Image (cartoon, rainbow, N blue to C red):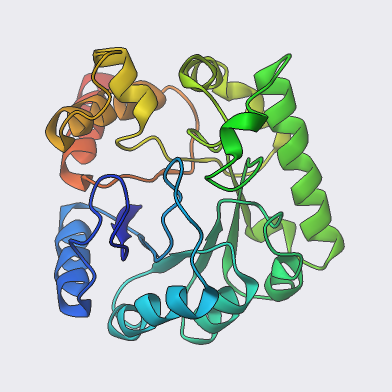
Length: 263
């Protein structure tokens, strides 16, 4: 899954793809490098980000949706039910809700009966306050339990369980050490018996492992760290990974697969 942010303030590529033609060209590039799905979002969820109005999210998103929906398998990253509903009507095949339905009580109703897949992430609050909620006794158990609660809520609302994908929500309401512990215990998510998506790309916990004093490192180093972790994650039976630099992660995947031929 290749990522395109349609925002002026996203942490790694804010402002680069606001123009629909620039976003379209980036989608073509990521697809040519091996992305099977393109994930577009118009609201930043970086730590400390301010929320935007729904109309502003849609203003940024809809022109790009129009360009891409008939060309690639499209995922829309949104916490807003009304945006998801429009995206579905325009051909989006995935709704990637980082809140798992907690941010908008209508999201599960919108997804009920939809042909699209629904990605439910672990989440404990919006960007401005999420780190206040980073308190765990057993992070893997609590993440699994909290995702399951949202999955059950979605299914109760009519969402087809065969259309649900789960995401551990790396970087959301988790400090640096908690993210690494969750990565190390990722197999616990298999208890949910659902496809697993991991979005680790360019996140602060990767930078912290390379240089704890310099978290604002450039994307080139973050992409290398992302690709290395992608290779390590291949020991798990993941449905997918969500990355900004598709080529780097595809290279890592190809190297691991090549080595695997001689096991």
